[in-house]
Length: 318
Image 1 (cartoon, rainbow, N blue to C red):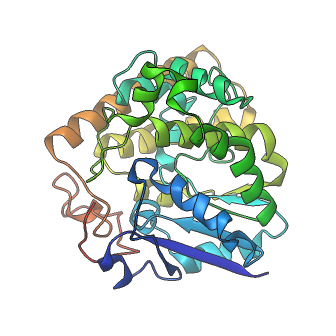
Image 2: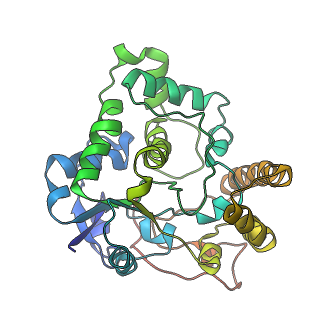
């Protein structure tokens, strides 16, 4: 099986030390930064790169630092699980221990109560038959938080035709002024970036999860972490506390597929706690994943065990 792993290089320094196992992909012209990785995906398909190997992926320079994985790990994992159309890596596996369904965090972190309704309006106008009111349980076997996936040519073409392109093509006239501004004017978000994005890339990332769950589950492979790997991905101590204290119970709920009142009460409280915690910590102490894994140097983790560095990149613009 031929596997091609691309790292999107937006700045010159991204070429100096790419994520191990990935080849640099030059996107320094960055014509539409408001689209983030989704402009890169369009380029991959337009240039036919999605047909250059059996499995192709194009990820941001933050992939290694966020996921604690490099290209060798990805190649090995795909090689052990042949025959799928898409291979998905969730950078935040700890969130499956906090949320029943991670769409619940979207209104909190973006501080817009009706944001999912707006997401749905955009998909309806685009003619994309996905449902943002769907409350599927998000666990390690079906959850993708970011645009970190590796797929066949068929998958690349279908996700572009059926989800990404219909949304990107929408004009201000089709959307109306309010929805258009919602997609393209900067939205509240805790992350760091030189180009503050509107809601558009966040909509497409969340819609990708729905799309995979609705259309590709029998042809998808999701990267499942061990408990220690989940802990290694935690960015904050309260995330580790949830995993350490309640991880076995959450795993038992998922294994049984039964979520009683105790389970739903737990997820409601844990999800609110984690969402507000990310907002609080990152407001007081901004964290960047551009310069390698920041976890060991964070003030609340310094001197503790259980994190490791991987996929480091040179200091660079955000």
